[in-house]
Amino acid sequence: MLSDEEAAKIVQRVFKGCTEGKRLLSIADGLTADKILNPANHKVEIGEHIARVGKIPFLWSFGAVRIIFENMRYLGAVVDFKTYKKSYKSKKCLPIPRENRKVAYGYHEPIFDQEMFDTETPRNHKTSTNT
Image 1: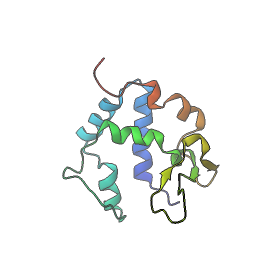
Image 2: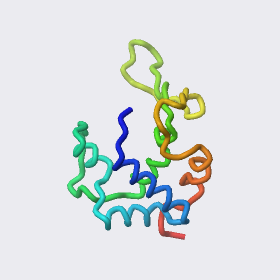
Image 3: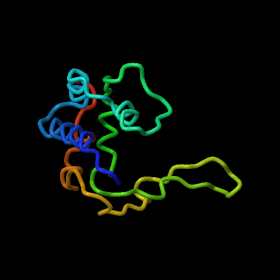
Image 4: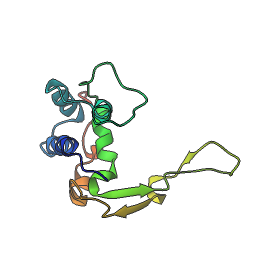
């Protein structure tokens, strides 16, 4: 996997905000205010093909921030066997539960460690400003 230093800095900023106790929505608002490209527009800028890109390139949602926490790539891992087909005749791919997926660590340098990933997941933080 190629290293993307700019994206790594954004991921580190998101996790730092979470360790400081910020909610995902306030992290997203900070990224938007600082005019940092959202993930889809960043991929377009570095030359990757994206099927759908929003009209506002700097708009971050708390969902986009939450997805960063679910991506095990930042641990240096590769996740395989995410979907399966009931029959070879079927075109429909069905999801495999997360606990049954195969995870291989050490494919590339991690941005943060497993302990930080486990303690700073969105499950431990509220995702909206409503209390």
